[in-house]
Image (tube, rainbow, N blue to C red; front, side):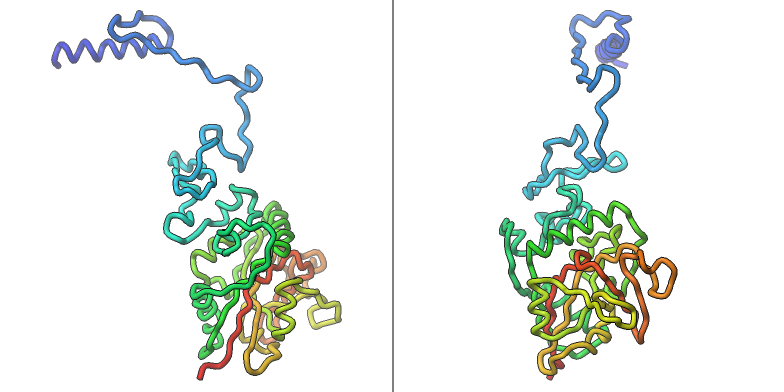
Length: 307
């Protein structure tokens, strides 16, 4: 080893030892730099980190993509410069549910709504796009092929608020996830916004055009009649079932709703009375929800037989 290089290495080594216990004097050409220790919360115990909040070393750091959210927490030693892997400013795929929960407990409206992008806080809009039309074509076409479809997105701040609050409550008790037939037809950007820990999924509900228009503004009114599986709002994950309840022959409409299933139980099983959602089978599997806060009527899907 070159003598000059050896002296330099020995000087650094001595400086390191001094930093640890002060047992050696520092090299005159390489003085030791000392840094003050970070203050502690009570003189003995480091300040505790609140789960879900930004770590102390991440505090104040924002996503480099410019979306305004905090960067994601480090995972397995990896540090991130963005809020989530699907940041809307990255590839147009949007924020996932984990990012929404980190940002504000999942209360904010979906990233892909035009109202969200415009920064609106009190709104009701019904809009459409090629993206949502393509997804509706996939979901309905899987069971009802040969349909011409127009899809309208319902964006309503007053309907979203109680739904988001109920989702947070369901997330806290973390029931088992229930897989539905609609899950496979969802695009990644839509599926990533669903909260599996709350049993969130998309389900169909068939009705008349007039009733659908009212539901889009006021949400559902649960049936109190003594129906086959009891009172509540009935849904299916199969478009053929909901199609049977469509009232208009020319231009049909079904609602594709976000539904929080929570705890699920068969209608004739023990514990059905306390379950968040009950199920029953009559040709097709049906999901019955009694609390409208578990429902957000996100899409009005208008369709008719092609040709």
